[in-house]
Image (cartoon, rainbow, N blue to C red; front, top):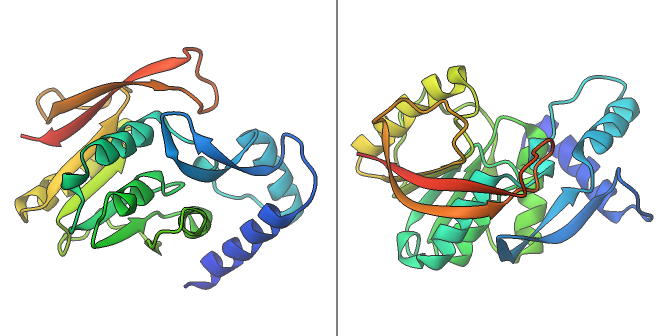
Length: 227
């Protein structure tokens, strides 16, 4: 574990064990669309972020891992409802955030689960969340998108197409993974950055929205795969 991730893990463990309540606390809660899984999430991620930055005395990455996103919820639900997709297989959760999809894959019987994220706090969050759900997930940091994916049977990615630049990097990586023989599943709530014909839908879910700054209580999320 890198120094940055080790420091982030220490901070999260301290936050989890801290007494008291309020909007700037982390809570272990069941996920609305995937109640089989519990995650340490912020009551208000923006308030929590502001307090942590003030405590650290410098800027910290946005805590995307401290909210549960619609694309990840749909993917996790899909894996738990169709455990044969993950059972006995090696699974990589790309841009894992809280680790929800990785945890669902482990609960579905995956042989081994890897979760990757560039944010050390997300890697730490995957670690504590896997422990809370009594599953084993190997959480790693670093940017994989310019690498050649290999060694996995199933690649899952929720909410990764959130802007044009990210979509332009992620889609070639997903295609390379599919070309190695891996199955690829993407959870996308229709943010508008998916080129026409790039992926095809295999399922669609009405997912409760819990992420910040969303007006609608439900989002229609597609689970997609390469052609």
